[in-house]
Length: 348
Image (cartoon, rainbow, N blue to C red; front, side, top):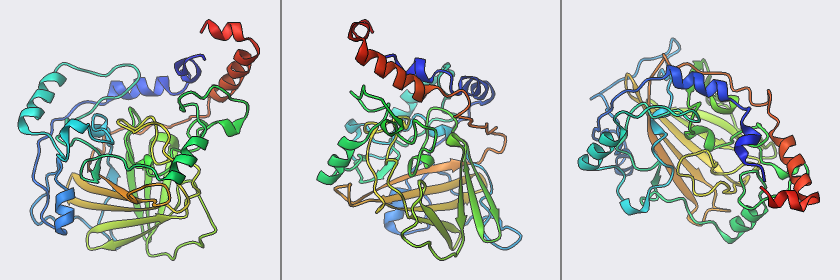
C-alpha cells in the first residue's frame, strides 16, 4: 500500500511551513492549583496554571465574564492524551524531571511536518480522571463498534472501494468532539468570541466554529449532529458548556492527537460532554472537559483538562482541506490496483 505520506502530502504543506516560520517559543513555570472550587476540582487542577489571587475577569459590555481572544494550545503538543504508565498516578513532573526535559529541549526547533511546543509543561497527560491518566477500557459493545469502524488510519485495512470505507476525518468533514478541543501536531489555534446570548469557539484545525447559545433550551433529542448541540450557562465566572445530540459517526480519539490510545475509539449518540472555561488570570483560562459515554466506556467517563494561554499575536490559518485533497481517490485507486495486480502489491 502506498504510504499515507504520498496520498496526503498535498494537504497543508505550505500552511504548516508558514506556521512553523512564524511561531516562537515561550518559557513556563509550574504553579499550585487555584483555591476556588471543590476539593475534587482542586485535585484535577494541579497543572502549570498561575492563578492570580482573587482575580476577577473583565466583563463584556452586556455583563458576562469576558473570555474573548486567541488561546492556542501549541504548548500541549508534547503532553500526551494518555499518561506514560511509568508515572502511575502522578499528574505532573517533579522539578528534577522538568529540568531534564528542559535540558533535552534546548536547541531544538521545528521540523517540516509539525509545529513545536511554545512552552514546556509539567503536566504528564491531558487525561486527569481516572487518576492514572489512562483512556477507559471499552465495553463489549464498544469493542464491537470499534471492529466495525473504517478509516485510512485503521491498522490492517487495505480495502477501499467507496466513501463508506473512510472516516469523517479522512473526508475532511470534521475531527468531531471531544477531539476538536485536543491538540494536534499543528493548527492548534482556538479563538473565543462573544456576543449577547452566544459564545463562539473557532477551532483552527478542520475549520470548526462551535456556536454555543447561552440559556437556550436544548434541541429535541431526534436532531443529531457531528459536533453535537451545545448549550451554555454561567456559574459565577465559569462558562459551562453542555453538549448532547451527537450522531456517533466520529470517535473519542484521533490518530493525530499525541498519545492517543490507538486511532479508532468509537463514540455513540449517548455521549455527553461538559466543558468548563474559567479565566483565572489575565492570560490564563483553566479548561476541563468531562466526557461521558457509558455505552462504550467501561468506566462510563473520563476527564481532560489543561491550561489555555492568551496569545492574540497567534496567526490562525485557513484550513482548506478539500482544496487539492486527492487522498480518497488515491486510496481507492491504489487499493483496487493492488487487488487486481497482486505482483505489483508484493513490490511495495
